[in-house]
Image (cartoon, rainbow, N blue to C red; front, side, top):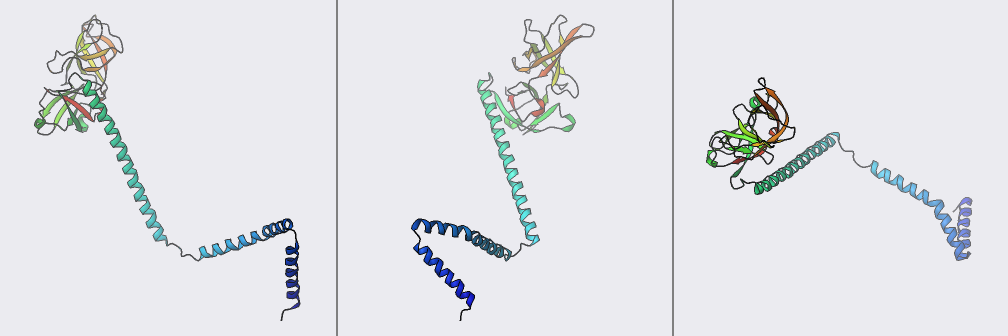
Length: 269
């Protein structure tokens, strides 16, 4: 048997239903909208509570498993970083090689140039020599000129079967006969500037009346018997008389970056 309060509630529900059924269509729509606005937040709260209960019932991930997953993600991230660095280095190498090959096509010695990779620099002689991956099996021999698109690098000093040592410009044993690109076209001998000045060389034994200007170009003269004429060497930085005016010498900023050699051209006979 229903109790009195239940009868009252049932009567109110039936009465409300009769009222809604007898309302015009517009009024019935507004009533439904008000009803839904009133009770939908309650439905939403119930759904949220149910979801929270479901998540709370999920099993917790052990600490060891989280540590293992983090370590795996760290290793995968490191692999991706290494792969990205290798891709970038390959792109830079391809760009260098394209530049080298394009320069060779415009060079007056294009049929005699052989590309070599720098494979070793000795710490004790860092600014004076390098080793390249060509040797006697590739036709190399001592005293062949070595250069880059920017300018003169040095000469081949010694040759083994598959490697060669290259003395760089500025080494005391790599003297170069050079000329100044000016009105007088004076000649001098290029030698070392200082033990740590890898970007500079000194052009000596210029005539006493020589007048030089900063920025004038220096080229090989072709008179030394090793280097052909016309290879760029660098630019004049400054000049001064030496040995009580007996001759003039000039500091020269080298065109080739000897500290960043990766590939060089060997000028074959």
